[in-house]
Every structure is written in C-alpha cells, then in structure tokens.
Image (cartoon, rainbow, N blue to C red; front, side):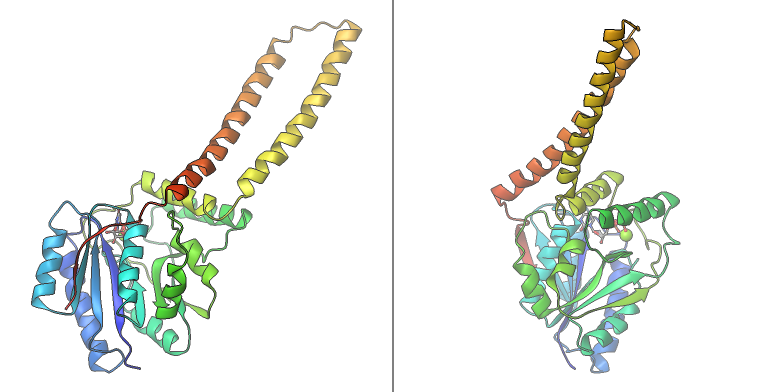
Length: 315
Ligand code: UDP
Ligand code: MG
C-alpha cells in the first residue's frame, strides 16, 4: 500500500478535452490518496507531443496551480507510441506504478481502482481490455478483428482489444527500457517482458471532445509496425510463394511445349499477357514487403533518439 502512482497521458492538440480530463483525474487521484491507496507523491503526468494548440499552456497552468499535475514537453510531434514511451521513462524515475491512458477520456477512469487492486495482488502488468467495441465505427471494428487474426497468423502475440490503457510496475518499466529498438510497438513488446500479468475489462466511451488524432494513415502505419517489428513470416511467405510460382511455371512451360510440338498454335496473347501481369504483380508485392523490412533496418541502424525532451515540470 501507499505506492507512488503516475498516470501517463500523451496529448496531441488536446486543448478541448484537457480541462475536463484534468478535473476528472484530480478527483480520482485525490480520492485514492485520501483513502490511503496511493501515496500523496502520486502525479498526473501529461506528455505534450509537440502540440500546436494551447495544450502546453494548459498543462503548465495546471502544474502551477496544483503539484499533482506534472508536464513533459517533447520538442516535436513524435507520435502516440513515442510520446507514451517518453512519459513512461520519465515516470519510471519517480513512480512505483504507472498507468497509461488517453487524454480524450475514452478509457474509463473507474477501471483505475481495479488496475491498482491487481497490482497489489502481485501483478506487474495489467492490461485494460475493452468489453465492447460499440463506440467504434463499423470500419474500425471489422479492420480490428481482421488485423488481430492476421497478427496471430503471423505469430505475433498481442492482447486482443487492448489499446494502451495499462498498468506497469517499476520493474516492468525497467525491463521495457532494455528494449531499445526505435520502432516501438508497445502492444507487441509488453507481452514479451514476462512477469505476472492480468486483465481488467472496461467500457470504452466516445471521445469526450475534439477529434481523433489517429487518421487512417497513422493507423495503417501502426498496423504495419505491429507486423514487421515482430515477425519475419512475411519474408518466409515470399520464399514459399516463389517456390510455388516456380513449380507452376515449369508445368506451364511443359504445357506450352506440348502445344508447340503438336502444332496447335493458339493465339497465345491471353496467356502471355496474363502471366506478365500476374508475375509482375506478385513481384511488386514481394518487393514491397522486402522494402518494408529494409526500411525498418535502415531506421534501426541509424538509432535515432525516439524523442527529445524540451521541458519537464515536476514539483
Ligand atoms: N496522440 C499523441 N500523438 C499523436 C497522436 C495522438 O500523443 O501524434 C495522443 C492523443 O492526444 C490521445 C492518444 O494519443 O491522447 C490517442 O489518440 P486518439 O484519441 O486521437 O486516437 P483514437 O482514440 O481516435 O484512436
Ligand atoms: Mg481516442
């Protein structure tokens, strides 16, 4: 009991929701501090992921008014995953427990008590899992289901319907810090850590205000990272595909030869065009997949920092 809890909240252009988010989290934290569940040194750490609106002004104002609020300002927009890592790594220095959640209040804050209970039960990692996807669009729902299936097929282990609402103990974070790949897909990395884990179900609400900071393009990039960071199966698939196509083409060649020898000269335009297009397509696809991995290697080899901290406010 009486452990230091840090809530880590990445924020990108979230001025519309921050007033509500901060007051709700303050109520939540005060309650837990008063009941002795967590230490009075616990904090709400907002990570400003290079916002262009007044997000940082709001965060520094909250920090000035109340030491409960801390702020970490990144020098520029690094994306949700990196902002989250920045916040977690900073929190690791001060906290016994961290819980990461979104700024838009989609993650039900009432689940925090259950997270903490699981922690005191001896779990190092607690995953928040959505009990339903009712608040998602049909598109997001179906693509999510398809994606999970595909990941499983590729041998990537992740917790289904878990976004980044999760509790991590200090030692889980210390383990996480040792994974220093640049393309960090937390949902895939965290299950690799091991330790005792548990799952808490929660209701996911609609975004409280403002609009999604995850347009389709960013979502696709995250989905691609999820696959290529954890699995070399696509590369193996290329090999298999290559072997199959080679066998098929040997048969086709035999067939063509027989036709030729028999003198059944057919106008082979369709066959020729068909194979050119099919092979061209498959080759391009394979090149694309290979390119994806080369791109990844290129990024890892450069080993650029994931984020640059501009300011850290913590009283
Ligand atoms: N976010 C961020 N950097 C980005 C994009 C998003 O820190 O480049 C934050 C955002 O402020 C929010 C969380 O990541 O707290 C999840 O984003 P959002 O709610 O827009 O995603 P959605 O719920 O629509 O998938
Ligand atoms: Mg959201």
